[in-house]
Image (tube, rainbow, N blue to C red; front, side, top):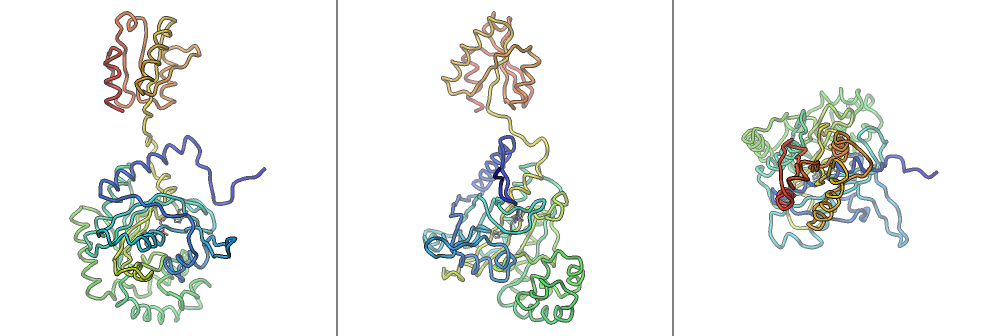
Length: 414
Ligand code: HAM
């Protein structure tokens, strides 16, 4: 038997409903804030991620699915969405039309990491990117969008971590200070972190090994070395978040694992997720467009891990299907049901009845199982009066309606 590849998973019909629903709510939310969908290819030139995600990121060092295609080109399955969006922005000169530009995307990403709970080799991100906004008000709005979306999805007990990792002016001198400090403890660090001392000591803060975490606790933090511009940006961001009434915690060790970030970085974490506790991560990347020879255009965005998001959904998270279930009692009612089914389907109303002998209670429980939004009950009384009982399964309300009123009622809600 051929089975699925390690770190990938099938999303089967009962679960797929949740995916459709979170994607729908995410789209609606982003569109509400003026974002437009962008779809970029799943594979790109390897160089795009080496230059974008960055040579010192663990993603590029260890986790890329890279192969040489039949034309001899080095290709990589996208490990994240941001570099592809930046490439498309430059390639199609989208910035010439008007800025700021607001994009969102939903799709699969690929990282060759050790699979575990919440970590897959093919996973899905719901992401968003803004270009051309320098003001920290957009940093706050981007965080507020996620907060809004999570609330819409009924997800609670999330902690928001924010930090600033400076800019090309204040970070290099800080990195020198950090390197000197890290070098003093080099022998105590894990082999990966020993390498990071020379490649990018900021990455030591991403290490999940207890010894490295404890050592890094005492290393100097970038937040204490910010230039005035970065300091002011961060302080304004905090003020705007306060204005929105959004609670957050400044986490000076939050460095984020990708190389392109400048100033604001953030993560939303949940204890319910276990070791892989970030449901999403994001930040500002003011130099990335320029790195790819594009114009000087600041950027900011985030990506939500869809698998982790779904695992946080409340149990009752389910939307009723736009389906009408007709429950009937007796032979005459059955005939009426057949005619009503035909009548309603012609009016484009999704409806079913089942013909295996069942009492009313069993039919209602079937409607529940099928997640039907409405049930129409046809019994003797209803037949006589030509008025049927329509039950709204979400609201628990019942109405008596004739055929025409029924169509009106159902199309109003569809
Ligand atoms: P990231 O932190 O690498 O950022 O990934 C964002 C989210 O994707 C994580 O918080 C997590 O929920 C999910 N994720 C990452 N790797 C895996 C995995 N192996 N399995 C399951 N879920 C995973 C980025 O990708 C940036 N592009 C975000 C961004 C957009 N920054 C600015 N704009």
